[in-house]
Structures are given as C-alpha cells and as structure tokens.
Amino acid sequence: MGKRGRKPMKSDTNTRLEKSRESARQCRHRKKLRYEYLEELVSDREKAIVQLQQELERLRSISKQIDQHGMTNEIHQELIQWKNDPDITNLNH
Image (cartoon, rainbow, N blue to C red):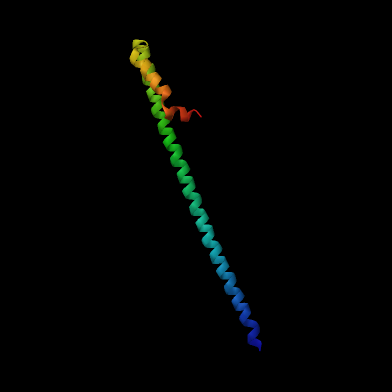
C-alpha cells in the first residue's frame, strides 16, 4: 500500500517536467519570431535609407546643374518627374 502514494508523486514530477519543457519550447519560438520581426524591420529601414540617399543624390545633381547652367527645360522636366514620382510622394507621408 505504501507504493500507491509514491506513484502519483512521480507522475506529477513528470507532468511538471513536461510542462517546463513545453514552456521552454514556446519561449524559444517566441524569441525566434521576435528576431524575425526585428530583422524585417531593419531591412525595411535600410531600404528606405537607400532610397532616400538616391533621391538626395538626384536632387544634388539637379541643384548642381541649375547652379552651372540655370534652369533649363531638361531640369524643369526632371523636377516635374521627381514631383510626380509615387515613391517620393509615399516617403512624404
């Protein structure tokens, strides 16, 4: 009869151990998802920075041309194109 009392204790230990393992698996999974999310965030920011650098260089080029040659029809057309560029208007909002 003494063994009857011990067996449930061992079962409880196994149950607690399995719950602990499952909790650890869930924690690792959440950590993995967090890192994936952060990597995606960083990637999006890096793409936006590259796009902004390209636009800045484009504007520098236009400004340099204006300084050297004044406002030409080509420059005027490029400024209109730049103003109507959907990628640029999305960055402003």
